[in-house]
Image (cartoon, rainbow, N blue to C red; front, side):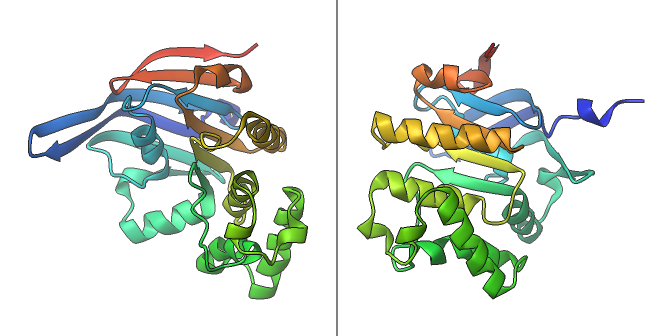
Amino acid sequence: MTSSQNIPLIELHNVVKNYRSGAGIFPALRGINLRVQQGEFLGIVGKSGAGKSTLLNMFTGVDRLTSGEVIVHTNGKSTSLHELSENALALWRGRTMGVIYQSFQLLPMLTLVQNVMMPMDMSGLYHPRKSRERALELLDMVELSKHAHKLPAHISGGQQQRVAIARALANDPPILVADEPTGSLDSVTADHIFRLFEQLVQSGRTIVMVSHDKELIPKFTRHVEIADGKLVKTGKQQ
């Protein structure tokens, strides 16, 4: 019998993604096979246009694959993302994955605490009073509770990224995916964000992050390199 410990958290089997344009078909991903284990901090590294963000979108189901399989194993259940309807996929994603973007994507008209509450209110997992309490706890975790009632425009970029991380954690997802989350931050602020990621991994989260910066490779527990839509190299940190 196979031990449940050997079952990966995420499996990609021969994932292909083609885009159609006026010039014809553009192959963005060419048969990707990848497994992600629970508790990994996996880096996906490659140049601009290599397919990093497209691959990340396969993890989240934001973009539909052309062929292949993406299977996520959580809470004793296996979910094939490509088989879910758009509504079912959105509900699953809201409860299973937290997404962090380079551009933060905070809603400018909402306060920080309201931004963090939003995923909870949309999913219906928490009573409104509880969602506010949890949002304040998460802002405290990222050392921003004293700014809870400010608008995003009134804090720095690094602080906005920490709010985005708190928002990604709102529904207590087992998986975080991050698309160049430190790309627009200075090195000191980026280091602070990485320390926060490391703490989250130590607490049992799984993080998949894409970056164009090979200098970040030592910060991951494992990394893969992608070029022209193919995985060309994998490595594990000692």
